[in-house]
Figure 1 (cartoon, helix red, strand yellow):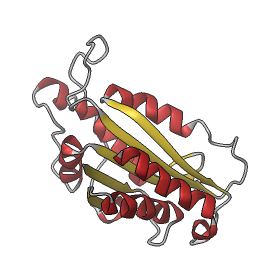
Figure 2 (tube, rainbow, N blue to C red):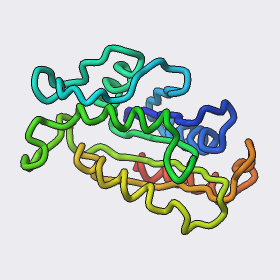
Figure 3 (cartoon, rainbow, N blue to C red):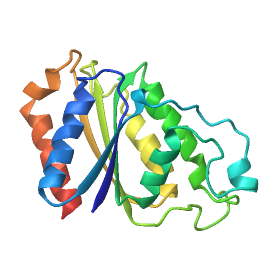
Length: 190
């Protein structure tokens, strides 16, 4: 099984990264091939709304560091997206990637029963960390993106969410979250 893991935090020792690391290490132990991309280290632009991916090409026209990531996701069985919650949303680094996935949709995606250019049957793992301890706050982030990624053929979507982890390394002391990351990897790999 091929896994692409996108690390959306600008912090090197981020809580979302620690959770993703536990998930990926477990998956690798179970035989997965994992490619990690630290989005903050890549040079790329967000979607330019040029519509070239709907009129002239079957992929994004922009040629930058995100091109390799978009191609890797095309080939992956599982996409892991890890991000902190900033101002009630995923990081700008991850949001830039998500906007560029518009290129995965066919030109008539709104009416086509098969709107995606990607192979069906992919799995999505969303890893979110937030300093805010109230689980009701920002609970809308995962369902919103899971809805859009269903268009791309991600039939299964899993959430690993850590609330109340403000400082770097806080999540590593949260055995419940780290166990959930391990167990989710085992489910995905089953």
